[in-house]
Every structure is written in C-alpha cells, then in structure tokens.
Image (cartoon, rainbow, N blue to C red; front, side):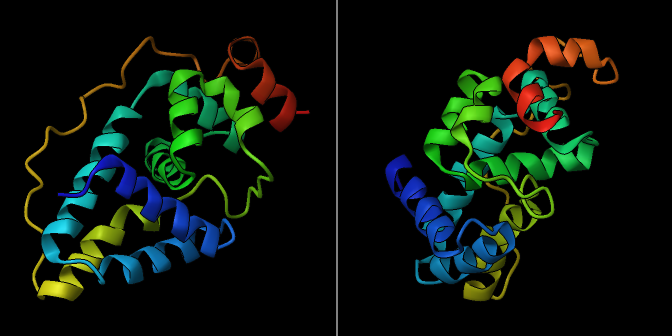
Length: 173
C-alpha cells in the first residue's frame, strides 16, 4: 500500500528530473510507475485523484484564472494536475492560501507551466503498459458537481485583484 510520503517522493523525483517541464515529468512518471506492480500504480492513481478532487475549489480556480489570464473548465482541470505535479509544499500551500502561489512558485513559463494534462493520465498509461488492460474504477468518490467554496466573478478584474493581490501583482503587472 503506497503511503502519502511515497506518492510525493515519486512526484518530486520526476519533477526534479524533468527540470520542471510538465510534459517531460509525465513521461518520467510513466517510466517510474511501470517499475511498480499494478496495485501500487492504482494506489498512486488514488492519491493523485483524491488531491485532484480536493483542489476543485473556487478560490484555486480564481488563482488559476489570474495566473493563466483566464481558465476554462478544461484549463482548470489541467491546472490542478500541474499543481499536484509541483509537489506537496506547493500543493498544500496553494490549498491553504491560493494567493501564496505568488511566493511558492519559482520561475513560471506561461508556455508550459500551469498545464499538467499529461500528468493526469500517467498512472492510467502505466497501468495499461503493465497489464495490457484499462485501469479499473479507483473506488474513490468523484469530484463534487460544483467547486467547493464561494463562487468568484472571474470577469471582474477588481474582484480578482482584491482576492489575489500577490498573484495579481506578479502575473498581471
């Protein structure tokens, strides 16, 4: 049974080896996961999915909106995958205070950062490579129908600047 520490060690190790490039990290993650047994890959997938669902929050969506200059449903899904890929400190820090991402993140390249779509598929891909079949249902609750918390008017720049002052200063100079 994979514990949370092992999950984050795999995430951190692949991010470091990829030099922060999310697509490269996803490739390395698949390579790392196929060294495990299929049950461990499913454990990893459960850890990933649980965090992905935890991050389905209005305040994080607002932070993504500021950082990415807009974030559709899909863009926010990929942002959440990317956020997990940034590791435990950044992920937990963002959940505690999304505006703290302005300080938690190092260099941010808008061409590649903020989109971790491929990270979201890594465990499924590894499982299929190991077993030749599609990963089964993970048996954990899905994300809520609506993001957690109070909705934010993403189109209102004054609201965003007030709610996320540090992110606003960094990403919307």
